[in-house]
Length: 138
Image (cartoon, rainbow, N blue to C red; front, side, top):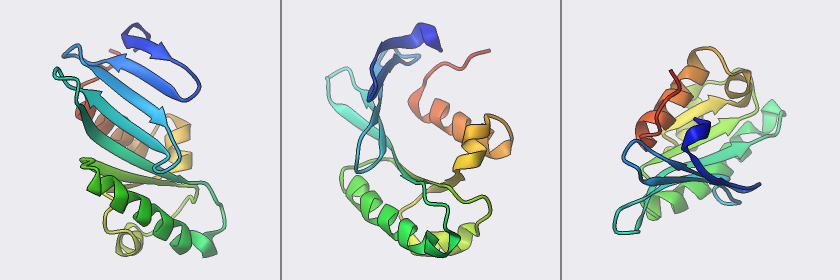
């Protein structure tokens, strides 16, 4: 993947995908992470908006997911194709959370993503690679 990195700094990573178009991964505030592709006409295609909810208090999960919902509504209005929420809780009921945030397409556990292994990490990685066209390391 390193050979595909065009530019990087603390808040932004720019990669070239298989079509030689720039894919921007940017750390922002609302949503927390945005992934976009620069099209040949220089317009940006909004691919993924990700909200990260880092609190560990399970009793407050519904408030945090509600905050993610507000951010995802804005992202959907900006034509993001996918909206994901990463939460810092190990075990959660996807169906319950989906009722709290119907615009969230995928929920992921921060621990699963950070582990770099397992089915949830593999799903997260595969979806990013598929949606952006970033070549995978073999």
